[in-house]
Structure formats: C-alpha cells, structure tokens
Length: 268
Image 1: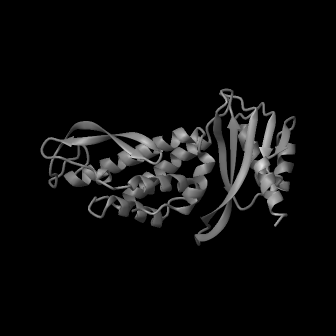
Image 2 (image 1 turned 120 degrees about the vertical axis):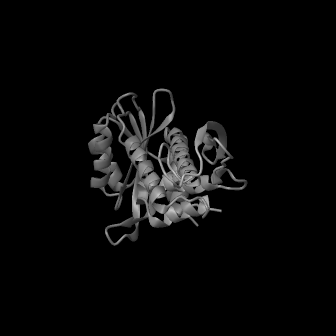
C-alpha cells in the first residue's frame, strides 16, 4: 500500500467542496493516463511511432475503463495491442496507486517534486512497470504546472460577495539545503453567484504576517476579485489589518469556529 503523505491529508479539507474538486479528478486522470502510456511503451519496447529493433509489438487503438479512486470515478483509455493483451499495473486487484498520485498532486504546489515522492509513486506502480524515476518526475512537474495555471486563472467571470480567508501550517523543504521547516499555507475561498464555494487562491509563505496576507489579497484583486461584501476569518492581527487595507468597503466577521476554539482554550 502506498503511503498517504501528511501534507495531503491536511490540505485536502481546505479544497473540498470548491472548484478544486473538479480540478483534482482531472489532474488524476491526466497523471494516470500518462503513467499508462509510459508503461505500455516499456512493455512494447518503443514509444508510439518509434522505429526500434527492440520493439516487441504494436498498438491497436484504445478501450475505455472506469477506475474508482478517492477523488471519484475517472475514465481511462487502455491501449490495445495487435497481438496479445496489456493490462496496466495500476488496474491490478487491490492496487491503490491513486492514493500515491493524489498525494503527489496535493503536495506538488506545497513542496515541489521530491525524490521521495517519486520513489513512493514508482513503488506503487510496481518494480516491473519499467517506468523510470525521471519519467514519473516529469509527470509530477506537469501536474505542478497545471496546478499553477489553476491558481493563476482570471476571476472576472464571477463575483464573490463572501470570501473566507484562513491558513494552515505544513512541513516543506526550503532553500538549496532542502531543510524541512514549517510553512504557512494561506487559502481564499469565495461564494459565487450560484451559491457554490470556489477556491480562489492558495499561497505558501514563511508566516501569517500582515505583508504576506496583503500581498496575497492584492494578487487576488489583480486577477479580478471584486464586489466583496463580507470577509470571514479568524482574528489574527496581521490578517485583519490586511483585510482592512486591501478590501476596503467590505465588512469583516470573525469566524465562529475559530472563536469557539479560542474560548475553549480559556476554560478547563
């Protein structure tokens, strides 16, 4: 069984119920499909349209196959061969490679692609898959690019009257020495005109300081965030000051969940 990374577990609830809920299955589908293409190329001894004396067979179209994962049911295209059959190792009984891939997706933005994550993903595929670490690392980097594109998308298409701001702390590698340290992950969630929650932005920094929050909110405004009437957050001093300066004209409300936690810390 592949390991579920702690950062993925901590970050997943922040993305649940938002537009990221549509992004994650798409990333999982693309990642798994690329893994299948790499494995069939290793199985045949050659890539598509590649001329090689070591080629052991030829492709002959695709067949659809549904795979149930922890991010929902996804549709995969399984290559067919002119002679013989091919079944990707991720579809073997009791194989849960989706957990490892899901963890890589969730952590790609947080800490980048590390050798340990690639090792876990290759191990989940199985040592006989024929897929190298460099190939899996390239897939992870492409996933990271897709996540970056999602977090930089324009926000002009919808107005968000209600915005939630919060932060959590995760372990990440920093600097050339790759030293593991705690880093702040700030998240902005908005409620659109249809009443649906949507992930507006996510950013990693050293701490929840006022300049960091101000920079984060200013970036949201540059992407088109406007018309905010109510902002909900905890009573962090740096955050409340940044809201007052960057979202003038909106009303701030203290999060009742955080307020209840603060009260419980003062009683036995």
